[in-house]
Length: 167
Image (cartoon, rainbow, N blue to C red; front, side, top):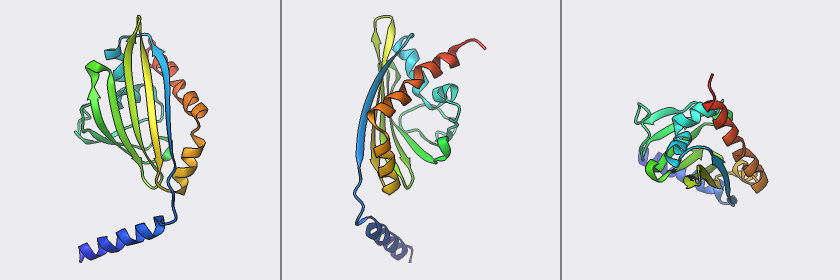
């Protein structure tokens, strides 16, 4: 019975998507942080982001304690959108964190952060590839221009500086 119901659900989803054509955008932007890469990458973990982003409050699915490790799963509701995250690659010694994230009914994205030494500071490269899952997702993809993406990423160094400042 359940198998039959799941099959019907899949057919309904396929029928609804038969006219849908997904759009995709990829963007990359760079900025510098005045710290070594191993310290910088910590700002791009769920807890690091909690320290710098006002609307960020991850709820940990696995591991429940929120230990940052490959395969960790968590959810967020930033901006009023429920998003499921999976940490697909985490190499803190190499300054690398990569995530897959799904905002149900809208879009899926791959997020990559690379922190590399550049003189006395760290060059942070942030890359997003966003694929729409619906018409609303297509609208989001279209609105996230290279300029808008860069403007958004450019807020990160200031947020990190505020979070690091003595209270």
